[in-house]
Image 1: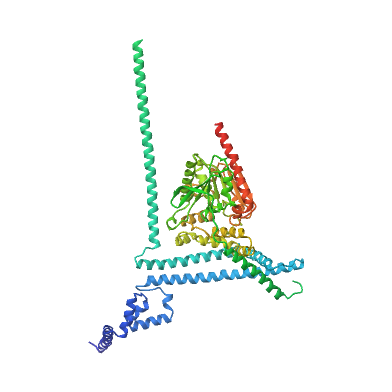
Image 2 (image 1 turned 135 degrees about the vertical axis):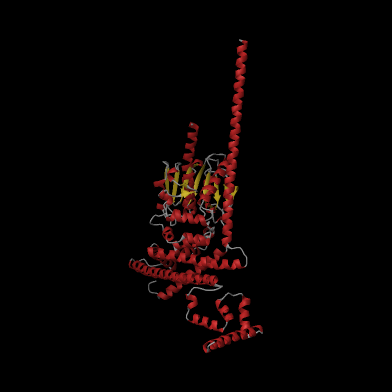
Length: 256
Length: 365
C-alpha cells in the first residue's frame, strides 16, 4: 500500500463522512432535510430540486449549467424530461406565434396608413371638384371604402396569404402543445383525455358500420329467402297446374 | 365649413355624430331578442343530430307541384336563414306558390360527430332525408335545392344517386373552388388542414366566422354597426339587424373529418370540377347529373364568387341547364327585398314547367 493510495483513501473517506453527516442532519430535521422534503412533498419533478436533494456539489454544478443557459438549450434529462420537453415545446411554439402575429399586425398598420393616404387624396380631389364633405358619417364611410381597398390589395397578395397561413399553422402548433401538457396532467389524475375519447369514437364508428353492414346483409338474405320461397311456390303451383291439366286431358281422352 | 376653424368644426361634427350613435345604441338595447324561423313545421325524420322538417302548406294555396322540394343547407350556419322572419322567408314565399317544402337541419355537431365526413353528410344523411321526404309525400322522386355548401353536397349526391332526384337546384354553390377571385381559397392554400383537424377536432364555428369577417374587416367589423346605430328611429330595421346578427354568429362547429375532406379535396385540389372526387370509393362524376338543373348565383357574392358557381355549366351532364343571376350578395340572396319576389318566383316557375313536363311524360307513357 503506497502513500498515494493512502491519501486517496483519506479524501474518499472524508467525502463519505461528509455524506453521513448530511444524512444525520436530514434525519434530525436540519435545513437541508426541509429543503429536500419540500421538493418531495410538492411532487414537483423539477430537475433543480432533485439536484438539491443530491447535495451541494451537484447543486453547484447545476447552477453553473443554469448560468451558462444550458438547461434550456440542451436535451432535458432525467425523471421529468418528458414533462420538461412538453413545456419547452409550448414556449417555443408561443414565441413563434408571437413573432408571426407581430408581422401580421405590422402589415395591418401599413394598411391603416395606406387607407389614410388614400382618404387624403380622395378628399383633395373632392375639394378640387367642389364636393365638400357634409358630416362625420360621410368622412367615416369614405375611410371605410379606402380601408377596404387598401386591405384588398394586401389580402390577395401572395406574401400576405403565406404569412396568414403561417400564423394559422403556428396557432395550431401552440394549441397542440397545450393539449399535450393537458393530456399529461389528465392522465396523472386518471381523467379521460381527448385521445381516449377519439379512440372511443373511432371504435363506435367502426361498430356502427359493422352493424349497418350486418343489417344490410340480413335484409338482403331475408329478401333473397322470400324470393326463393316465392319462386319455389310458383314452381310448385306450375307443376300442380301441369299435373291437373294432364289429368284433365287423360280423362277427356278416356271419355272420347 | 368654409370660414370656420377646422378643429372646432371637427369637434362639433364628431360630437353630433356620437350623440346620434349613442341614441342608436340605446334604441338597439330595447329591441330584445326577436323571433326567428316562425313558419310552422313538423319534424318527420331524425337520425343522429339531423332532423328533416316538413313545412305546413299554405292554407289558402292549393298544392301546385306534386313533387316535394327538399332544401339541403350548409353546415356552416343554421338553416333558419331560409325562414328568417315572415317578410324575409324563402320558405314562406315557396309555400305561397304551392310548393311542398322540406328542410334538412344538420343540428349542432359535437365531439361525437368529429369523424363524420362527406360520405355521412352528402350520401347517407342526405339520401335518408330524400327517402324520408319521398315516403312522406308518397312519391318516388323529390326536387332538391342545395344552398352554398349544401349545394355542393347536393351535386355530389345527384351524381352518385340520381335516381331519386327529379330536378336539382343549386343556389350560391361553389363548384370550381379555384377561380382567381376566391380569397378564401388563397388563404386556405398554405394552411396545414390535417394538423388543424387533428388538433382542433371539430373546427369551431367562431373560428370560421373570424375568417369570414377578415374578408372585409372595415365593413363587417365596423361599418355595419355604425350604419345601424345611425338610424335609431327605425325599430323594424333594428330588429332585422338583430336577427341577422344572431344568424351570422350562431355558427355550429364544423365536423372535423368533413372539414378536412372539404378543404383538402374540394378547395385545395378542386376535385369536384376535375372529376377526381371520390366518396365511399365511388367517383363523383358531374356528367352523371342528367336531371334538369337550375343554378342560381349572386353577382356580388364575396364568399362564393359567381365564376365558382357558373363553372357548373361546363361539367354538368344535363341538357336542361338554366342559370339565374341575382343582383346581390351571398346573404342578400336570401333576405333582401328583391330576393323575396325574384328567387321564389324563379324557382316556382322553373319547377312548375318541369313538373308539368314530368306529368305529361307520365301521362304519355
